[in-house]
Every structure is written in C-alpha cells, then in structure tokens.
Length: 203
Image (cartoon, rainbow, N blue to C red; front, side):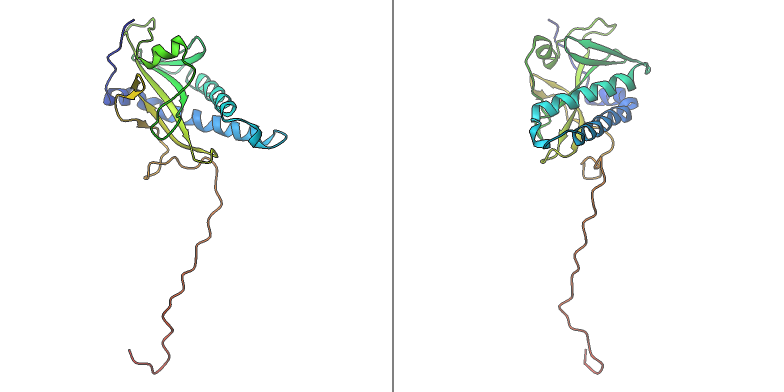
C-alpha cells in the first residue's frame, strides 16, 4: 500500500478551477431532480428517510457528473467497486459525498476501497502515482430543504489536510445561494415615537 503525499491546496485549486462551474451544476441539477422527484410521490415526504434521500441524491449527482465531465479535457471517469472516481490531469482522484455536519467531514460504509480512499492510499493505473484523493461534497441546511454549502476537501484518516475549497455560487457570507426562489419577507414598518411638530411649536 502506497500512502500519497497529497498536493497542497494551491495546486489542487489550480487543477480544479476549470471544472468548478461544472461541479456546481452537477450538485444543483441533482438537487433539482430530487425536489421534482419528491413532489411526484404519493404520501408525505417525511416517509423518506435521510439515508434514502442521501442515496438518491448521490445517484443523481453521479449521473450528472458522468454526463457533464465525460469527454472533458484531462478528465477520466472510473468506477471503483461501487463508487465513481473522477481523475483530473492524472493528479487528482475526486469522488462525490454528502458532508455529515459543519465540519465538512463524511461518513459511510467502510469498505476496503472506501478506507483506502480515506487514507490517501487507493492506487490507480496512472502516469502519476499516487493521486491526491479529494471529495466534492454538499451540506444541507438545518431543515434539509436545500443545499447550504458545496466544497472540495482533502482529508487523511478523517482529518482535513488543508482548508476546504468552496465551490463557486456562494454569497459574500459564504452560504450557497438558494437553488429555488424563496418568497420575499415583508419588511416591518418602524414608526417614529416622535410626534409630528405642529405649526408654532418651538425647536
């Protein structure tokens, strides 16, 4: 088993830059498909478990990623025993995941392949080996109504090696702009406690 010496954040950011808009669109389209699919179901959305939702959204993201990135320059798409891995410039191995909380860490079934990926040790038949293993993931809002953050992370054994790279589409506050328009909140009217000055009143 070969443990990778991962690329630093700046190098990864440079390699990811041409693909960031496409990655964002993959997440946006996948969530839109989920919302549309959920609306057509009979019964309450509460009947769908969080695990089922995560699995379906993952499948939609993988489908979007495969369709949009296949044939792109310096991109190769591979299936590694159950999950999709995207190779960028033969330097990065990228997979999609759901972040479990604001720490932007992930969880899942600990298969041998997944464990090796998390250890930066999954080997690929490429010119440059080993590749830096990255996760492109999403975090839902507190009510699981929308995606709250999209980011790319680099971890080893569950710990971040550098600060996450936020995917474009974020506001100045760092929060993902809503995927679906929200009704405007009426502005409250603040009335002055000061009485209008009558003619003849002194200043």
